[in-house]
Image (cartoon, rainbow, N blue to C red; front, side, top):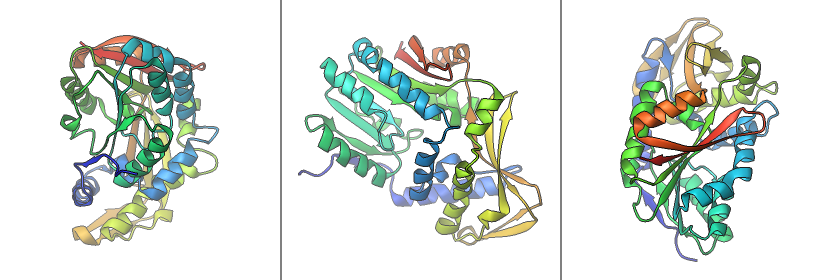
Length: 323
């Protein structure tokens, strides 16, 4: 069997340098913060897969429901020859799009992009077994910084699923969407998954489940810092916190120090002091109203063609074309 078609624009050394820079910036800020992408080592990815199966965590099921019902319509509307997935992970849900586009007769290639080379190789190997006639071209890259590496052959449909757009603040979303529009030719497509604003009693439990899986996922970022930067965080000394911010319409996940402590981050030659009750923000997960999505996509140069909701009106898939 031939080698996998894989382009690497992000090496382990690049990832290590980014972690050092982000950890120094976030741990010396006031208030302290860390980017959510550092949840996802092998252990964190496994924990997140467990989260997606929890009764409280609806987004994955809701998005899969929409894809199962609407993938055929997406294929007919777009006629895409190339499917690109940003932050692809295992590409499990994306198989619904692959099947629909293949059945429609237009699909020629699939281009998954992810920061994890190992995860991408595993996903490509599985896809190659199940789609032997499909050209697969993996890209190890950061979708924020490497959009320019996307191949330009064929009418492209870019899938950005899972509600990941919510991890951007408004100030970050605008340049990202504009940069993505700049990489697409007029008439090419974006399929955007976004979680919707809803009752706090539904939102908060999705990020603070009874079984404590999300709490362990949140604390995993401290395990990552301990391993990669030789820090001495005691993860058990931090309480998982999930809060709804109605002004910003987003969920914040935080880690709250349960006692005063000083943490040594040896590789940064940095001592980080926490007061009892001090919080470290680890994730923002914005929720959207359809009108706001339309405004932001229009400002970036997209024209919304269709929007579909799940049966509970909790999650949306928006199909927009590059204007």
